[in-house]
Image 1 (cartoon, one colour):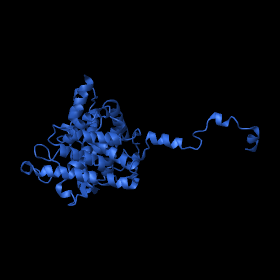
Image 2: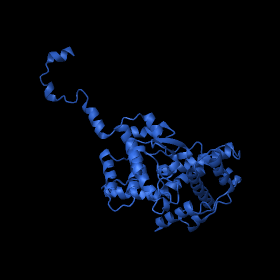
Image 3: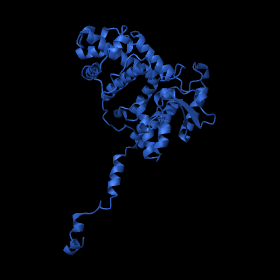
Image 4: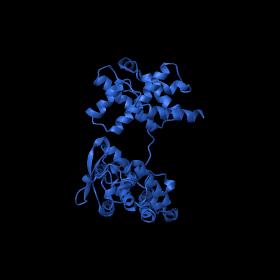
Length: 358
């Protein structure tokens, strides 16, 4: 019960209170990230949540409260000012990271993100506002993420997923859903990129479309034959319902006539995965992005540098995770060793003279 109560309190602290309970210092930093550095609203919101979590923890612990106390999650950070920020030590941050691991059960990736937010905040306080002389987070090592290969659908599983859409006889949005999944599997789009596509972003010849990725960075996504055919079929259906469409420029429309939401797209992906017998994969839309990247690299022979541009990665190191080799290819590589088929019986006739000449 205590664990569930703590989780509920955390959710309230992270999502409901965070926008109302803030401080001028934090707001200045967030505006700097959004306006000056051009970070996306989503990224800035993540900064807000992580900083709120840290300073709430610090205010509570300095007031003598512990995570088991009811009031621990009810403290306000409105009093966090320059003097409070200057008082933060490296030890404070280290103890916070221990708290996030032991009390909140945060993953390594989540703790790494929180530390990254703190490093960025204190860097701003040192370099821009010049409130501090040294960044107390600068020398703290980032928690190491456990290396893992991206999960993806095989080519045959991808075909099954697409087929499950066409086989849904009760669906009134078959063309839309088929187009969405086709774009995911062929172009490797992010969920936010797909739902944000406008009609004005699409090339007149349906050869390409513009998408807005992380950090509001625009890129051109090129469409293959499968994408064009699926897009044409959907646009024809969409045109028949123009009178009911409220968001006229949005490409993908919900049943209510508005731009489709990310949650709806995620739900329909789950629906068709289940219909294809792939529900055990526990896939998200992002795994379909992994699928597109993996199939392009492994089966299509796409160069990793080209793949980087297709996926909209800013760093090549992010793309290189897709250069993993399947178990089948590893097995094939080992079998190509010239000694692969050499058996003890093949060596039994070898003479001592042969040994002497070696």
